[in-house]
Structures are given as structure tokens and as C-alpha cells.
Length: 439
Length: 158
Ligand code: FES
Ligand SMILES: [Fe+2]
Image 1 (cartoon, rainbow over the protein chains, first blue to last red):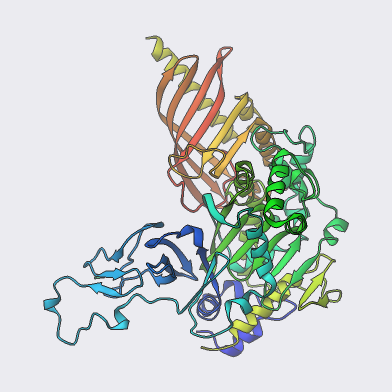
Image 2: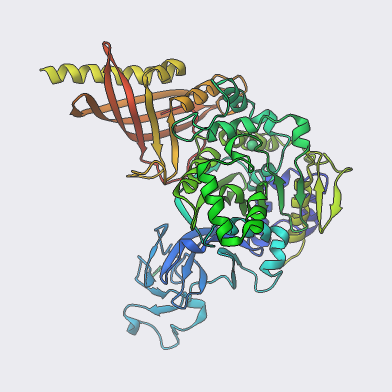
């Protein structure tokens, strides 16, 4: 295991040591100190609406089950039998009364308690089925913020509210976009893998210098195609995909105008960068007009305008969740190993909104996170190249200084309008905070 | 006898299509689609819903033009260096033959890039319509057996 002093030297506000991306021992320490303690996004309540519903996911590299209890509460159980360690549940989701191990049929209750062991007579008298050590290990803290469920493996530590800090406004904004106040994960999901460290995704999310270079191929192709971004350009998505591609082609000056915010908890968000077509928040067509009207009926005109007017793109809740509230999407990041990461993308159906609004979110998800995305596939390629470059060992420390002298402090966060690398610096600081403290 | 001739023509068409993809002639591949043709790779097995369920790719010709243009861009990083592929098409079955021809086939695509080899496999369904002495694609649907799982970036059309 990496030593504390070594670890602390890794995070420098001006750039992380490359070891943090390549050294398996550091990865192991991250799983323990960050993913074993911080609030990890484990799912949305709509994925487990009824008692007995479960959803299989990960906390760090550990597979867990998010389970709706008979009482309506939520529990997060480790997906491993306490008898000999067998993986309990192989389904991704479902509904059950209990979890029965395929190996020797130990049965566990929805809350993880061991309730049945076949042929108990064979056990000595001191074998106690109620012994907590025989229960499925359950995350000591599970909390939901407006339907977004987070779990922590630490008994104590910052509350979910303290951990989220001002990022609750991204969740609020997404939920408040539903006229009837309910949002639901729907429309399937996409799962993508890249050969690089998990931090590379987060460091890229609010990096607004890269789009002009990495996405040049999709910008140029979209620009050169016949016609501009006109509403019924393409039968399938009425110009949305093309709009998303073209939007990465802002001038450096326009990128600079996009505000970046980084919070002390390591979270960050960027202002919106869709300036044309229906993706731009001021634009309306018949569908969005109907939707706006129903939101106004629910919230009143003023609040509806505030909700719809929040123009942001990536809202990164470090270290596991990215929210695109405006487009009703999330991405969930799962570290697999020091050099392998899985990203899952989901979209939401907003209760009370027209079906077409949901269909647009579905389209958006495909363009944004599909393994075949004309945009994202280039990001994934770059993550792999960074990983390969760092593995060469020639780079001791990455550079994250851009904007360091012009960042502004205000309202409990750092801000920039210079395409700053401040999201990197707040992530490095959060990394340092979690990693620097031993259990 | 007649259906064997048609089977032969359709097989030939599918082989030509695969060849264009392997040679990197993406513009000519796109020309095989009818003006209102659709290319679809669903995200889940047995997916029937195009609008309410996300797809890996769901594109009409207007969008495919962008995809194809990007593939020949000098800085399309995910295809630089460009991969070598083999699209192997087999087990071709003519399902229905009216004015539209429905063909089912098996696809194995092996891609090698930068010394890394990837294989994707699926069941293809083509809806074809006669056009001159050949066909045009009204729908090409590829149901990957990996659908629902985890993918590395996919760049070359299947
Ligand atoms: S390992 Fe689960 S019952 Fe034996
Ligand atoms: Fe990007």
C-alpha cells in the first residue's frame, strides 16, 4: 500500500503526479480512501420504485445491490455471499423477496440479514444465523437527495448535503424541469469502456480548451454538410445531432465567455455552450412551447423561467456523477482498474412533459454517450492516448496551470471566464483531502 | 429457381457492401442507401422502439453523411491511425420477398488498430428495394450480440 507521504506529494494544485493515473497501488488507495468513504452515486430512486426492486451497480470496484426495502427505505448491499464469497445476484435489475446464493443456497433477506441456511443441523451450536458478520455487508450511510441515491461506506464523515455543496442546484434544476415534479430514468442506457484512468473523464468534462481540437472532425463535417442547423434537417432528430456537433466549434473567445465554477468539494460545472438551434435554451418550437406552458402551470411563470433559464452543460459531482440537467441526462463513472473505466449514460422522462421532450432526451443520450458517438468517440480515444503517454514514464507531473492567476473567488467557489483549468485544480484538492486522511 | 437467382443477387449485394466498408469507401457505402434509408444499431436485444429507447446508432442519410464525412477527416482521432477491418457476412436468408426484400444475415466484424484486435458480432436485417440491376437499402439493422453490454469506441460502421 502506498505510503501517506508519497500520496500527499502526488496532488499539487498546479498538476497531479502522473503516478496517480498509472500506479495500481495508488488506485487501490483511491478505492479505499475515496470510493470507500465519499458519497458514491448508486442509482436513481425510479430504478427501484417498489419493495423488492433491486439495481446492481458498483461502489468503486465493489459490486453492490441497491435494494428497496419493505419499509420503503433503501439499502446498499455488497453482492457477495458471506458463506464462501460467491457473487449472489447476476441480474442487472429485477424484483425479489430474497437473495439466494446459487452455491449452497444460503438465503438473505432484502435488508441483507441471513435468514435461511439449508440443513442447519450440520452446524455446531455456536453457529448463529443472526450474527451480523453473516449478514450481507451494507453501506452504513445511504441517502437520497430528491431521488438521486448516494451511499458511503464510512460510518461518519461529511453529510450528503455537505458533500454535494452547491451542486444540489443541478439536481434541483433537473427535477424542477418536470411539470409534475417526478423524473424517471427511462429509454435504456449506454455503457462505454475506455482504456484509461477514471480521473481522465472528470478532468475532461469541464475542459473547454479541448473541444476546438479534439472535436474538430465532427465540427467540420457538420459545418460542411448541406444546409445549416434547421429544425427538420434530419427526419430522425430535427437537427439536434448536427447542432451538438457544430457547437464544439466555438471560437476561443466564445469559449472564454463560458463561465466555469469549481467547488471546494471537487465538483465543477460549466455554462451552456449551445448557442444555436433548438439546443439553445432561448429557442422554442411547438413542442417546447407546450412543455413550457405546462411548467408555467405547475410552477408559475417566474419560477418556470428561472428553471428553464439555467443554462449549464456538465455538472460534475466528483467522483462519480455528471448531470446535464438541461438535457435530462446523467453519466455515471465506474473505475475498473488503474487504466480502465466504464461510463454509463442514462436519460430521464420528465413527468407531465410531452413525449417528444423525452424523445429528444433519448436522441441526446445517443449522440452524447454512444460508443459510436461521432463526438464522444474522439474523447475516448484521447483518454486512451493520455494513459499510454503517461505510462511511458517520462512525464513526472501533469500541468494544470491555465487560468491560475485569473481565477476568481466568490460565493464559496472559484470561477473563471478564461477557459481556466480550475476544474482540474479543485479535483486535485478534493483528491488530496480524501487521500490524505487514513482510516 | 428464380428465388435462387435472387438469393445469389442479394448475397452478392451484401458482400459488395461489406467490401466497401473494409476498403474504407464510405461514400460509396452510403450510396447503397435509398434516399429515405435508415441505419440502425439498437442498444438492446429485441428493441422495437426507435424514439423512446436509445440506440447505438440510429441515422438517416442526412446524418450518415456527417458520419461518413468525419471518417475521412484528417483529425478524426478515433480512426487515426485507421483500423483494418474484415466484415464477414454469412448465413444469408431471404425472409420475405414482395416489393420489399427482407434479408437476414450474420455479421462478424474484426477490427485491428494499433495492434489491438476487437470483434463484434451480430444479426443483420436488411430491407432492400430493387433499383436498376441492383438494390437500395431501406433499412439496415444490426443487432449486436454484445448489445446491452459495455463497448469500446465503435468507429467503422458495421
Ligand atoms: S457460497 Fe453462498 S451459500 Fe455457499
Ligand atoms: Fe470532448
